[in-house]
Structure formats: C-alpha cells, structure tokens
Image 1 (cartoon, rainbow, N blue to C red):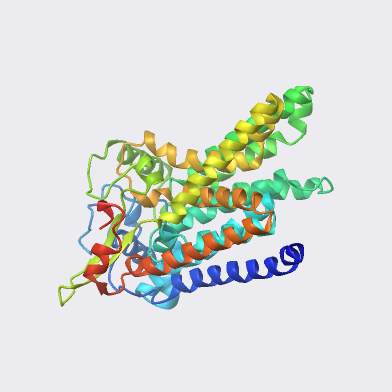
Image 2 (image 1 turned 45 degrees about the vertical axis):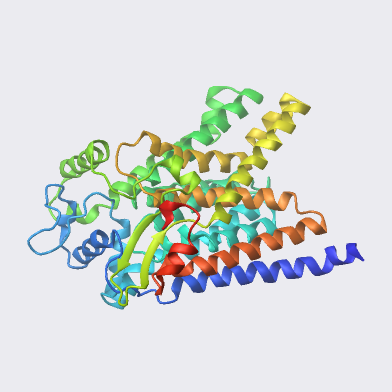
Length: 453
C-alpha cells in the first residue's frame, strides 16, 4: 500500500503543489505592479536615465555631470547601459508609467525562475528543478527585486543563464558534435557579456566561470597529459575567445550610442576609470547598509519605500527582507553538502575529491563566492546585492532536499516545508509590496529581529 502511494499518488500531488507555488509567485509579481506609482528606492536614478536614453540624451555617459542636470535628468553613468536600454524600450512601447519602469525586472524574474528550474533539473532531476523553481518563486528578496525598476534582477538572469549553458556544456552527451560544442561556448560568452554590460556584478560571473574552466582543464590535463599543441587544437583558442574576449567585446559595444554621439574610445576608458574610482573611494553611509555576513544571516533588511498614511494606526511600506524559511533552507543545504563531504572523506580521499569536483559543489562555491567577493569592496552595500548568491543557494538546497526525499515520509516532509514557506510568503506579502496594513501587524507579527520592524 505504501509503495503504491509512493509510486502513484505522491508524484501527482508534488507536481500540483510545486506548480501552485510557482503560479502564486508569478501572480504575486505582476499584481498591482504599478503600485506605488512614484519612485521606489533607486528608481529615482534608473528611470530618469532610461528617459534620457529614450530622448537620445547621452549625458548618461559623462561622469562629470552633476547628480541632476539642469534638465532634471539624472546622469546615471555608474552602471553599464544594457538595463537603461531595456527600460527605455519598455517606456517607449507602454508609456512612461510605473508599470513600464518595472516590466524588465519582472520579466527577468520569470526568467530566473525558469533558469533555476533548468539548472537544478540538469544536476538533480525534474523534482529538484520544480523544487528550486518553487522556492525561488517564494523568495521574498526575489519578489521585491522583481517589482522594482532596478538592474539587479536582470544581471542575475543573464548570469544564471550563462551558468545554465555552461552546465549544459559540461554535462553534454558524448554524441554532441563539435559545432554544437562551439555554439554552447559562444552562448556562455554572450550571456556573460550581457551580464557584465548590465552591472559590474556580472564580471563576478565571468571570473567564476573562467576560473572554474581553467581549474577543470588543469585537472583533465593532469589526468590525461598530452602535448601542448594538442591541447591548443582541442579548443583552447575558442574557449579563451568566448570566456575572455566575448564578454569584454559585448561590454564595450553596449556603449555604441556614446561613440556615435562624438565620444571616442578615450572617453569610454576614462568613464570606466571614473566608475572604478567610485567603487573604491565612496565613503557614504546608509542606515540600511550591510555586508555579506549580514546577508547570510538576514539581519539587515532595506526599507525601499514608506508612505505617509492616515489614520496613523495603518502603514504602507516596502521592505527587502527574506522570509526565515528560505534562509534556514540555505543553511540546511550548506550543512548537508558539508556533511556529504565529511562522509566522503571518511571513505577515501578519492571519493572526497569527487564530491568536491561535483557540479553541485560548484553551485555552492559560486553561491559563497559571489557574495564573498563583496568583502573586498569598500563601496556601500545592501541586502539586495545578495540576490545572485541567494538564488544559487536555493538551487543547492533544492538539490540536497530531493536527494533525501526518496522515502514516502520524507516526501511528505518536503511537502510540509513547502506549504509552511507558502503560508509565510502570504503573510509577508504586504510588507514586500507596499499594501496597506495595520501598524500593530508590523510591530507584533514581523517581530523576529528588532532590525526587521
């Protein structure tokens, strides 16, 4: 009887439950997307820059421009321009409304859910993919960033897409042709270039994938030594072009309107130097700023928007904070992977090394590395910089969850965890989207940490 339940009933309810959670997350991202109708957090910088692109005002490439020019257009020269183009395109098609400002972010969030599914499915099977997609859909930080006209969701989508194609390349069938192999490498390079041309965080993906491939090639070379010229003809020039040259080429080509407006190569180089100096020398502070350690413990949220509400016993605000269930799963996934590493080490050093070099271990390394890199950045940092690392951590947690869910009671336990996370998501939805709620609810329900209130 139990075997029949496990074989026939559980797969169906799992699919229905995970599908409902994903649909709920998608609907929560688009419902009242145009509210609030005024700027939310850094939209005050991104939206005027997108309007400037729409009006072909290329002062956004002039680093000496004041924060707000005489025409009222913010000279957002700090970030690369891909997101500006996408946002300007949305405004040009659907009008200068809050819905259009945020459309690129919400579409990218749908892409992040899909890519999370594909990566987890590739590494752990269909159930792992559905679980990862559902957890990403239930992520509070992911929800908030999908409803704000900022570039973080777009760079996360491009970066994860490059990882997805890279994993497809690593785990490809042996029958794949050499031409298909070359196209996959080209796809990795194109998506890495778009990530870097959206936000400098994209360069972390470039360095991560390039470093992983170098380490993998060294390992292959040590296992099966061949002559140097044989290695070169085995595809090294094409890989170097795709992982090294292509991202840089796409990054500089993204500034092509600046070239056509009379700004030459020297201007572009000086702009990059000004961006670099900004990241290295900024000494501003913010009450909601935090670093990588605080991100992993979810201790410092960011207040994006707060409305003046009458009567005073009600409030409306948008706070970027993660729900505790997601963070517990991140730590549980990390602990489970380390537990597997310990068990492998007890068996043999060879098995431990295989566990370390498994692609699942690379997901962990990227999740930790993308956030750990900010330890070396002196510029002001916020919780939303944790977004790419959190998505990778969720994928890791989904992979480890489905590895232990072979028995029927563990599968029901997984279902219970997902239901609890969905209930917390529904309870926290008002403070993630700016809905009007009683003030006592903020003070007595969202009570876990004082910094959350």
